[in-house]
Length: 140
Image (cartoon, rainbow, N blue to C red; front, side, top):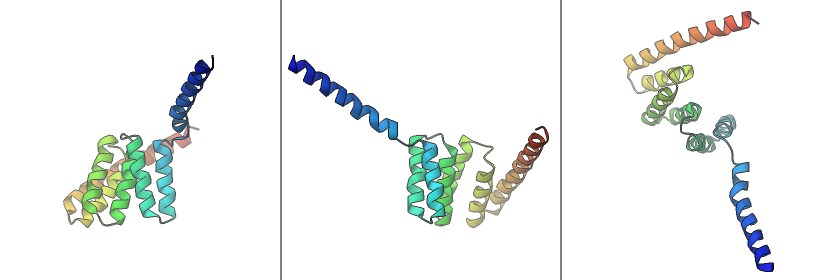
């Protein structure tokens, strides 16, 4: 009888070791919010890690890429920022702020035509979004 009890205890312990980390693991959205908090604290290395964790946790989370692009812009790593913002827009072409940030990135890279195209897209989408929000508010 004791060997069965030991085997059962070992199996139960093994299951708990596998399950418990998943219960306390942060979501992609949690990492994104952590990144925003780190930016407010001016901990840009911590913010970069948090945004990268958000992407690692969910590679289809455009907000993680957007946050990472912002860090690259802040550090004047415009080539990296461009790639990350393009990925953001690949995942969500209507991500209004990503168009603006990509426009800023292009402006810093001296690519004025590309910058203006992104700013134009930003203004168009922002106008639509504002109109939608106004109609939504009026209907309540």
